[in-house]
Amino acid sequence: MRTFDHIDVYSIAEACTTLREYQGRARLNAGGSDLLTVLKGDFLADYPEAVINLKTISGMDYIREDGEYLRIGTLTRLTDLVSSPLLKEKYPVLSEAAYTVATPQIRNVATLGGNLCQDTRCWYYRYPRSIGGPVQCLRKGSGPCLAIKGDNRYHAIMGGKKCFAVCPSDMAVALAALDGKVIIVGPEGERRVEVTDFYHPTGNELAKDEVVREIEIPIKRTPTQQSFRKFTLRKPIDFAIVSSATVITVAQGICTDARIVLGAVAPAPVRAKAAEELLIGKPITEETDTAAAEKALVGAKPLSKNEYKIQIAKTLVKQAILGVTD
Amino acid sequence: MRKHQINLTVNSQVYQLEVGTGQGRVNPSDTLSFTLRETLGLTGTKLSCDGGACGGCTVLMDGEAVLSCMLLTIECDGKIITTIEGLKDAKTGELDPLQQSFIDHTAFQCGYCTPGMIMSAKALLNENPAPTEAEVKKALSGNFCRCISHYQVVRAVMDATGKGR
Image (cartoon, rainbow over all chains, first blue to last red):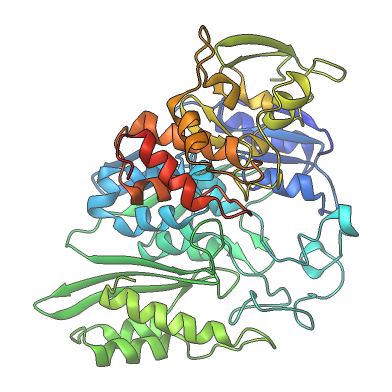
């Protein structure tokens, strides 16, 4: 790994001012399990001059309810999301999703904020310098997306615009199913962004001097059935080929509210709104479930080598809605 | 703030390391695995993939299993690290029961993944001295062995808990 300046910061405000001082030539570090792979691969156009350590900011790891919202601090580790009794009881979709991420060793350091902000896993984008990279692509600002004509088996089947990399975050999928918002702090103050709007086709919503401070989730007043499903070739370590999170409210056998979210199919988590609308007002049966799964994938436009993801996505949605265990 | 010095406790020994370049110093881009092996000479910790995927470089940080290749040493200031060298009894030199169990079960072939396997298992047993086989497999899910020693590893860990077959 090439070297860099290393700066500890003690507040979010200090992180913002330090980012501003470096004018885009510094990277934030929380757990480090994504950033270190980026720096070791050395595939970015500009290697950062500085790494800003956020772990020296105290009081940023918490999971608490405060009347209206469940609030999770950006530095909360995935291990703590997995083991939180509050999440297990009331927000199991979050603890289930956190458990599917990587391995125990990585979950012991990886943070929620870092999981949301991790860089894409596209193998063209990440082609390492040591074996002939970096390769230029649209996401890096020059040339076309190489996945369009290349090996795109893990790329987007919907929502791709010029770049067809998918959002690698599992937590984003679960948070989207809970209507989570990302609280972003910048020099001008705070703003809130829906998790689904946090991701752009070629990056994310953060400006060069902004930091994710917290995730805010509206508290559900009625019990919901929550579930997270992730398809991978190996259970640990692999990123999702497709994932699905569902949060469904059922009253007297009838679905009264639904969130169905697909992950790893597009540059952002995708709310399958047509499928949600189909379910609302109906009982959850094999029939309505199958119809919702079909509806969730209407409009998918696979690339040359990833049509198989459509069938996997339909199956995951079906399993998630019915609460089928694998 | 830039750090000029860090304190690292490795296997109960405190190291004061200066930040900078040159022998015996910690460069900001040094990983913990690099510092352990190249700066402190503790080569028991193995580096395999150097990308966070294999578990070979697992050590304990404040009692929990972490990947030393995915941590910047400069960010480990004040942490307590245990490596495979730190498991034996410091006075008698006797192996940890977990290490002995790996030997008794021949729970390795080439042995390169073994220190990582043992450290992950140690983290589990510290927290849960009597795990089920499923819990052992979960705890070791981030450690990969290309010689397929996994079956013997699970038996060795179960045996070390007194629940062996």
